Each structure stands twice: as C-alpha cells, then as structure tokens.
Length: 446
Image 1 (cartoon, one colour):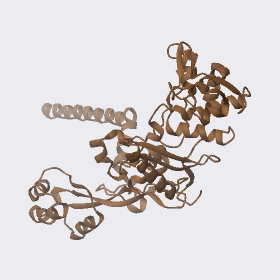
Image 2: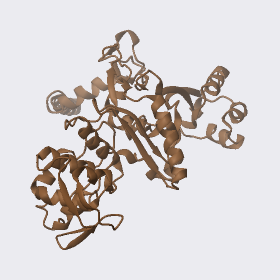
Image 3: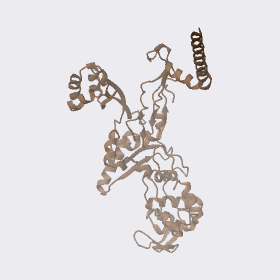
Image 4: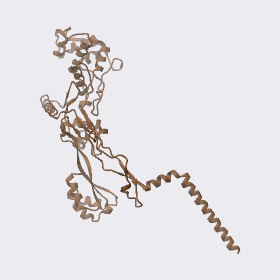
C-alpha cells in the first residue's frame, strides 16, 4: 500500500504545481499583460479596409475651361498562386500589355504572393483584360492627372506625380485642398478573417478634393504665349516670362514662361531638364534694370520731395560712394525734369533722385513696394528676391543707393516687379497677387 500512496502524493504534487502554473499564467494574462492581449484580441476580431480613392479636385480657368482634370488608367496585378494556367494567361496578357511573353509568364510562375505586371495601362486595355476573367489577375483602376491645355498652362497648374502629390504652381500650393479626403472602413471580422459587411461602419465618408476656379483667362493666356514666342525669336532670347495682372484687383489674368513643358509628362522632364519645372515667374531672380526707375520716381513724388516739373542738371554722370554712374547713352542732357527721367530713361536722374531721398526713405519705399520680400502669391516655389539694406554692413555700400535706383545691384522675380508696378497704377495700394478666384467644395459650397 506504500507504493500507491507514494504515487498518489506525487500525482497530487504535480497537479498542485500545474495549478500554480495556470494561476500564475492567468495573473500574467489578465493583469500584467492585460493591455497587450486586449489589443491582440481586437486585432483578431477587427480589420480596417481601404476605400477606393475619390478623384483629386479639378482646376478651371475663370470661364470654366478645364485646366487640370482626372482620367482613369489601370494597374494589372497578379497573385501567382491563384493562376491556373500561367502559359495561357501570359499568352493573353503579353500582347495587350506590350510585354515579352517570357517576362509575363515568369512573373506568373513566381513564388511571390503578388506581382505587378503593368503599372499604368489605358482605360480600354484595362477593361479588355478585366473582361477576360483570368483567375489570379486583378485589374485595378487608378486616377491619373490630365492637363487638357498641355504646356499652355504648365507653369500655372504645376503637375501631380504618380502618388497624387502636387508640385509647383497651383497643384503644389493648394495640394492639401485638391487632395481627395480618403478614409478606412473599420469593423469586425469572422473566424476566417473575412470582413463582416453589415457590421462595418465608416468614420467619415470619403469625398473628392476641392475644385479651384482661377482668375486666369485662357484666351489672354494663349495671346500672351503667342506674343512671347514671337519676341523670343525677334530678340534671339533663350527664355522669357509674361504676366498680365489686373491693377485694380491684382488678379493674374495670364502667366506664361518659355521654354515650357507638358505637365502630363513630368517624368520625361525630370530625366532631361528638371530645372524646367520651376516656374520662372515666381522663382527666377534677375536685375530689373530701368523698369525700376518707375518705382524710384513714384517714391520721390509720393514723398513730396519733387514734382514732375522739378528740374536737375544732367551732366551725364554722378558720383555716389566713390562710384561714377553714367547714362546708358554716355551723354549729358543738361537741364531735365523728373518726368524726363522716365521719358528718356536717365540713370543719372534716377541716382540723383535716390540721393535726394536718402537711404532711409528710399529703402522704406522699396520695401513698401514689396522688393526683397515674397509677394505671397498663391503659386508654389516663390522666392523673396534680394535687396541689401543699409544696416547690412557686410553687403551694402553707399554706391548701392545710386545703382539700385535704376534697377542694378538688386534682384527681383517677375511677379515681384509686376506687383510693384501695379501698385503704382493702383494709386499706391499694394494688394496680394492671386490666381485662385474661388473654391468649390464637393457639396457645392463656394
């Protein structure tokens, strides 16, 4: 009887030890690691599935002409494990995708769980492949950005990449508004990990991006491009920019730069000349030259120091800060009026005006015109230009007061210069130049 009792005690000890292990494990699961197992259980019961993206917001000119819209193309994908006859499927797909038969068949026979056969095929081709009903082959629609006006409005619209990200122009500046609102549906799954459709609830319904209506006039845009193209040939110039701005509202009616590019083929652009994508109207800095005299004269008149009839003696040169400034003609004109400074484009007269104003007053007006500062135009990629100020002892010199007066020794962008000139035409009221007239939300709210 001793042996059975010994066995019984041993069995009792083992059962007690097992019970202790179970108790410890329960404490660990229910108390110590409670959060971990709660989250793990939720992940097993629920799943998020992505909803098909709605389209990006369209861009139109002021008359409603489409400048940037959306088309449909297809990606062709394969799950090789589900392909029944790789040879037959490859034979059907190869000519339609314009891919070598061997390449397609190799992908269909691979051990990979997923294979991309073609990233972007035309709508008609995608629908034709879908109609074949090939097992293991998925034809997935995707939005692609289209630009009906092509290069005509390239620097206005900018472009979108394959991931739907906007770059440059309106596409870049208003990317957050143009992007569609996408969400995921979240809900429980059954024991086989399939979504339970009637139990799925959306957080927020997806909707398209905001539609933008521009101030741009397509007709004026086309005329501006035609005139710029003619001028480049006439003056044998490599490039140029034309901006048409309403001086009362500061609406941009046309904005053209040459050379240009096709925004729908931005990939080719980046492989040949990536710098071409940057809009010269807002990013190219240059010395404005004599057109700056308009600002100098306007500032002197507004300050009350001179009138259009005020005279000065034009000797053909003037020395400022140890630098001698001459007229472009290298001529002396004798007694001239302030009006003559603009009529005859006199460097000496402009320099004389700036010295009469003095650095504080001259640069106060230059800054008020927006020189050396971004205009905050709603086009991506704007730079600030460059103008040294008298308190910048490292860069500014007294002679700059004279040369800046006729547009040398400083740098502006085309949009800065046209905004400054428009300010003069608008009786000194400087507004923010803009190209978007209104926004239309998906629900029709403006």
